[in-house]
Length: 171
Length: 239
Image 1 (cartoon, helix red, strand yellow):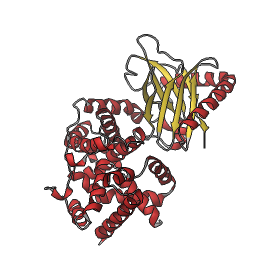
Image 2 (cartoon, rainbow over the protein chains, first blue to last red; image 1 turned 90 degrees about the vertical axis):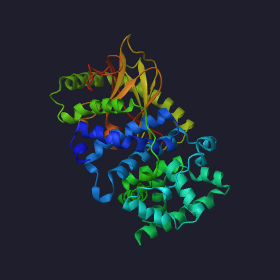
Image 3 (cartoon, each protein chain N blue to C red; image 1 turned 30 degrees about the vertical axis):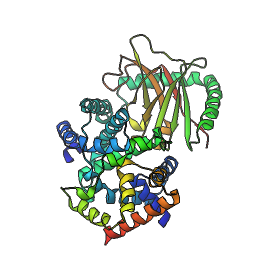
Image 4 (cartoon, helix red, strand yellow; image 1 turned 120 degrees about the vertical axis):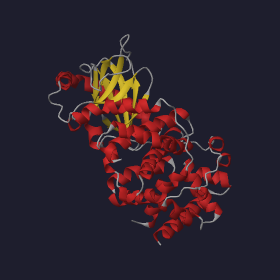
C-alpha cells in the first residue's frame, strides 16, 4: 500500500490482482448487475489509488480498508439506481442461494475472529439481519419483507444487535 | 454523540439505511466531525466481515479501464501549477471572452434554469441541486448539467448538441484550486452521470464546466485538445 501511495504502477497492478475478486465479490452482492458493479469497482480502485496515502495500518488490514471504500461505492450506487428496490429484492436478494456464513470462514484474522466470537453470541435472527444488510446491502424495508415483521421490529433488532456487537467488541 | 446518532452511524456502515437517510447522513458527516468519526469507527468494527465474503472474478477488461482512468487523472497530479500550460491559457482566454458575452446570455440561461429547476424539483425531492446551462451564446444552449451535492454526482443531458462528425464532446471541471482542467468524461447524445466525489464541495459549486471537441473517445492525454465550445457555471435550485 505504501508503494501504491508513492504512485507505483506495478504495485497498483499487483494490488489489483490480489484484491479485485474479493472486492468484486463484495460489490456484486450489493449491486447484482454486471455493468453497475464493474463501474462501482472501477471507481473504488480510482479512489484507492488516490487515497492510498491515507491508509493507516493501525486501523486494520489494507483489505478491510479497501473493502470499506468499495462497499460505500456500491451502497451509494444501489440506493441511487434502485431506490425502490423492494420489488426486485426477492430475486436478486436470495441469500439462501449463496449463504455467506462468516462463522464458517477458515482463515480468520485476529479482528475477524474477535468479530465472529461476538456474532456467535447474537440470536440467529439478529445475526442474520446484520449479515444480510452487510453483505447484500439489504434495507430495513427489505429485511422486514423477508422476515415478515414490521419495519419498527427490524429497526429494534438492528439496534440491539449492533449495540450488543459494539459492547462485546469493546470488552 | 447521541445514542440515536451512533445507531444511525452504525446503520450507515452496515448498509441498511434508506436512500434518503443515507444521503442525509452523508451530508451531515461533512459538517459533523463526531458523526464522521462514529461512522468510521463502525466501518472499522464491521470491515473484517469483508474478509469472509467469497470472491467473484471480475471481467478481465476492468484493470485496463481503471488504468486509463488513472492516466487521465495523472497529468493534473504531475503538474500542480497549470499556469504555464498553453491549453489552460487558451481555455482561460476563451472563458474571459465568453464571460464578456455572457451577460445577455445569462438572462436566457436563468429562465432556462428556472424551467429546469421546476422540472427537477417536481420530479424528485433532492435536497441540494444545482443546474448549469452550457452554451456558446444565448441562442444555443447545448447541455444541461445538474449537480446533486448529497450524492456528489453530476448528470449531463444534451439539449441541442451534436458532436461534429468523427469527433467526441468531452466535459471538464475547471477551477483554480484544481490546477489543470479535469475530465468528467466523454458526453454524447444521451444523459450521462459522473461522480464528483473526488472534488471538494467548494470546487464543485464554484467551478466552470466546459465542453471541448476531442478525437473520438475523448482526449488522448487527459488534457483539453482545444478551447471550450460550451461553458457554464452552476446556479442553485430548490432548497
